[in-house]
Length: 510
Image 1: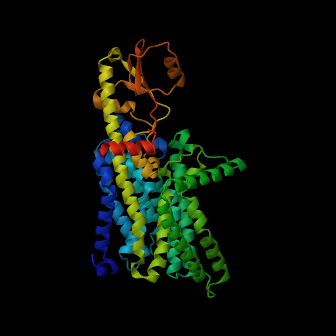
Image 2: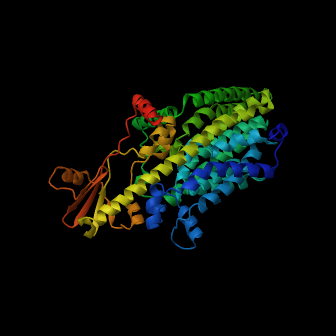
Image 3: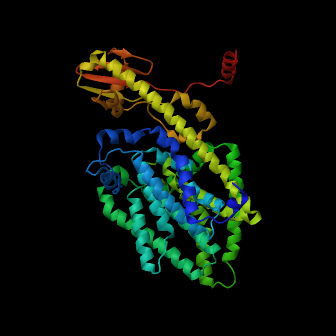
């Protein structure tokens, strides 16, 4: 590609093609493996419509329409392909909102919405992943849509945001961060203060209307586990702060030093641009009351964006530290990219192409994660075949019901430990706390196995009173009366010894 193509303004068709190619390349490892992630296993087997109890009211109708019936069939990767197509148009819409004349580097600015290790785990779910993507698309449009009449903007924004909440509640975090970016954009455009304050108030009101609509219409249908919120007290505030520190610590610990240095440099440039914009904001021609309002809003952008990395999830009784809850982190990356891009291109037109470096790391993580999923699938298939054989060739094969007792500690897959050492972020994204699940056994013809997490049963079976019918390094099978038990053993990570590794290489080189 010559300099002219990299420097010039891109047409709407070219931007669309760029995002289509970029998103497909990033998603290819997930599509090619076709791995059934945790929830996908039982959703595929039972085909249940359980999202209503989770407060995600629109997912069931989405899959009902796709299957042309009242069930929720697994037709992956079709839902993800459709979601990618919709996301491509949403990203193009955002690029042309951020830049009057978008270039290639301008397209890179919004790419972290998809190119993000924090969003990769969301995409792993064959059922929930595409629905989360559609929730993000709704947020992208809700955060920047603008019509001639204020009431039209308010209604459309609140409707889109309410729909997004019914697809994935934590999309609210991304919405808030994107509104912060939109505020920065309006300041760059030198929009009149009255219009900026009005627009900001409209977004806040739309957020309140959407949350109110969601709470009134959906919360009564949710199960109690999803409704638990921390009490408003000193202990509750302290717990939220502790969780936020934990989130930032988890993020910092899994990325390589080189990437952290690059992102620190970009963050410094972004902060420089942030300060420079504030000077533009407080120009003498602005009336005092508008200047105060905008200054307060502008100075809160950074703390609000950082808080929204996990955001609403911090207030739940059951706090999930998984990367899939860090949806706001993608928006924070876009903010850093946008502000640093403005600084970089002010020096040289090609300065914005520096953003390719962290994006290439995200692409490497995606393909490394694809290898992890392949290894996990191999482990599962091997274990399932062995279990099916041992069940069918022992006395438990005649029993009507069997219970699987899961292991307490599982580090899987063993073959991925080298990848985990090289890219610790992959372990956070995969988070496999199992080797096999009961719902997987119908793949090999065994459909009478159910999960049992009662620790008392495992204790009784392990005290020597009952002898296992089958004992292997990975599991033990017991027959107690007319009931069978499959006790899964802990799977520990292999111990890595540098000296042993050198000795093995010496042997293999002979």
